[in-house]
Length: 244
Image 1 (spheres, one colour):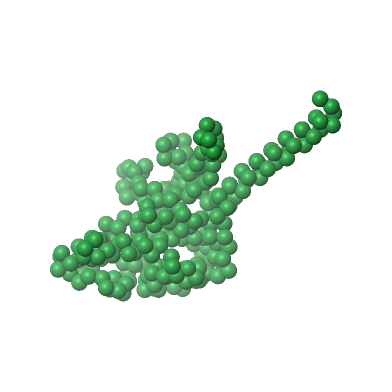
Image 2: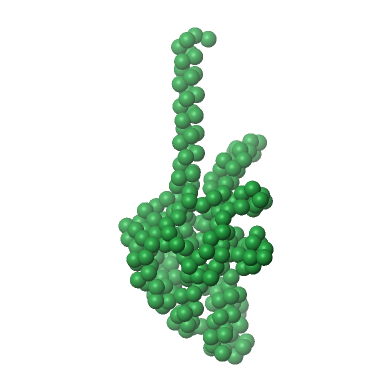
């Protein structure tokens, strides 16, 4: 092999290693390229996405939290409107309204039929101090919690949560090659209902992470796997009791 050929091969190898390293760093720093800066407050962001957050924005205002969402700095694990629709339900498909009807209590026709203090309390379960992006949370592997256990955090509500980043495997297109923990990274959050069993929780994946309004960070939860307040039984019980 000539010196020229060796030099070319070395340059190609260095370029490949550089590209691999850059790709790896991209995944670490921006959470799978999901980063998006938003020129406005967290409240402005919710208002700008009525398809996803019209109901959530209404609840924020009913709860008396509009000023907080405009001015205070925090991290918001955002539920979507579908979570509220699922919570309230109907007489035929179940949910809160069916329970209220069977108990002979007034059903929820509009969002203001729910005590604002209840909306306020459960919204705070989704709010955490500071501005934390995906890269600020530790790795979690739900099959190997003694090694990669994420970390527990207090929300501004009553909740203790396990939050961590799942490092997915990188699998070749033909499925024959697997690189452990080298795939895309996805943020997860789980509400710990009982501290006696801290590893027992339902981990909800984040569908879109690292959205950055001026006063915080928004991580949008996967509404197909989560519920408003992280345990719909809790909020349903509180609403039922408030209507007795």
